[in-house]
Image 1 (cartoon, helix red, strand yellow):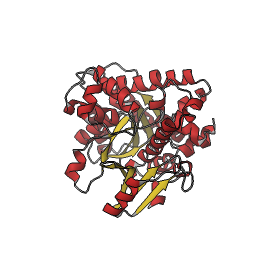
Image 2 (cartoon, one colour; image 1 turned 180 degrees about the vertical axis):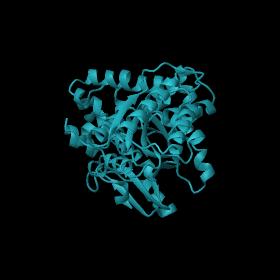
Image 3 (cartoon, one colour; image 1 turned 45 degrees about the vertical axis):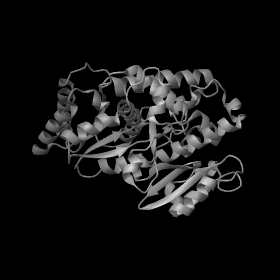
Image 4 (spheres, helix red, strand yellow; image 1 turned 60 degrees about the horizontal axis):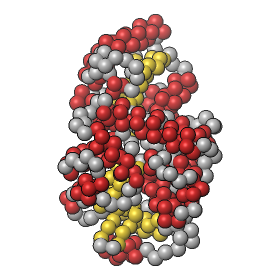
Amino acid sequence: MKDIQRIYFEELNNRINEPIRFIQVLAGPRQVGKTTLVRQILEKSKLPNNYHTADAIAAGDQNWLNLIWNEARLAQKLKGGKYILAIDEIQKVYQWSEKVKQLWDEDRANQQEIQVILLGSSKLLLQQGLTESLAGRFELIHIPHWRFTEMQEAFGFSEEEFAWFGAYPGAANLIKNEERWKKYIRESLIETAISKDILMFTRVDKPALLRNLFEIGVSYTGQILSYTKLMGQLQDAGNTTTLAHYLNLLSSAGLLGGLQKFTMDKARTKGSSPRFQAYNNALMNCYSYLTFEEAKATPELWGRIVESAVGTHFLTYQEEGFEIQYYNEGNNEVDYIILYKGKTIALEIKTSKQLAKGLQKFEAKFAPHRSYLICPQGLSWQQLIRLHPSELF
């Protein structure tokens, strides 16, 4: 593996070298390189620093924060100047946001130069803590899943390998042994994310239902399924409100989301059936009984996999203001509608030369800023996943 720096390195590095103004918070799914990024920053920095993780502290132990913070204060006084304190998995500390607020405000009052970096893998829990106690005291950097260009640079992935094996750097060296790779994704990534980022900190009355929703949802990636129909697929079905809540929890952990239907009426958009979308193609393909080569030889399946890979690419840009939806009207569908700064583009993905009636209907009805038929004869999906979405507008 080539040691690469994600684009967020420069942003965070610039911020910690400024005068101390805010707590810097890095949020994102598991295994996307948040810890590696901070360690790279600390190794490069000439400032004294220390890194701690709350991964193994006892539940309810709030004194741990006092201890490491006071150590940082003493070190800063002895060495003078700015000191960097990085704390990983901060959401695991009981009532962490209130304690961080207290300690941060004390440092401001005492003019203590401690630059704090917080990392967390549960977006929902982090945002709750930040908005409840730390309003006005933090800046948030969202770290999404890796993109194709990063996987290619670091591991030599081809576009097809990205579509099948997804974009988890920790699993990249396992792809030559697919059964081992699939087991790692299921047990070390999916189960850990569900158990530690959702079930441990959020009330879930039916954990088996949440897991079932995830497995069915990723298997239906790229397909529209109403919550009512979904209940018929689930062994332990709840009501539609419960399923929508569980899907939101899965989305907050960077596992499975639901794209909303494009309409000109925002109320109808929010009430539409979601189109399931895995955040990383590894999450859907790790359940397949097929191998990479067998999947490529199955045209209909491979088309869905490619379509999902394009979706995962665009999802990594959501925090930059790109909104991803889908269009469906009768028999007319468009795979992805991208909204940005008041403009709309439409994308239909085809792995062979086919008519795109849905795209034509969408153009006639909504007159998007631009529309694209992604196919081998034009702009290919392999080219598309190399582009920043802004290049399409």
